[in-house]
Structure formats: C-alpha cells, structure tokens
Length: 104
Image (spheres, rainbow, N blue to C red):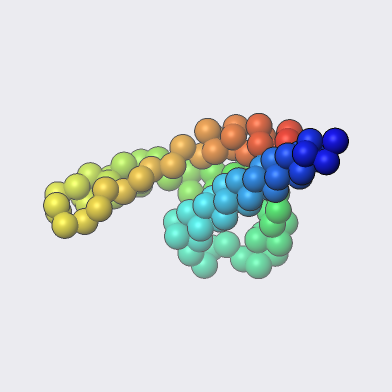
C-alpha cells in the first residue's frame, strides 16, 4: 500500500539523518580535539565511514575521556558556563550501527 511505502521512506530518511548526525558529531569532536593533526587524506579516508572515524579519534586522541572529564570539572567551577556534555563514542557507534539497519 502507499501508506506503507511512505512510512518506509520516512523511516529510512530519519535513520539516514540520525546516522549523519552521529558522523558529524564524531567529526566535530575529532577536529576540536586534534586540530591540525588531522590531514586532508585521513579525513577523506574516514568521510562517510564512522568506523574509520572512530578509529582515527582513538589513535589521534587516546585520552579523549580523561580530557573531557577534566574539562568538565574545570567548567563546573563557573556557574555561568553551561555543563559540558561528554559523548560516549562507543555508544554512538553502537547506535550508528543499529540505525544503519533501517537504511539497507
């Protein structure tokens, strides 16, 4: 039926948006944490591939968790600064995989 096809298309669009959002979040965290250490060739390799992106984050910034917790603690001393959200990259990768099953 047409309603089912529309629902499937909308579900696939939502899954694709979610996946792109996770990829963008990981990419922004990578750029913020390593800056210019990420060269254009490495970026091109991981573009559209969150697994590679996650591996590059782990390689270039292995202490991401410690740095994030330290930054969060420093920021918490000022009540005028909004709290820092620390993203769990492993969970994001898990969700990326789950959402991907709706696309294929």
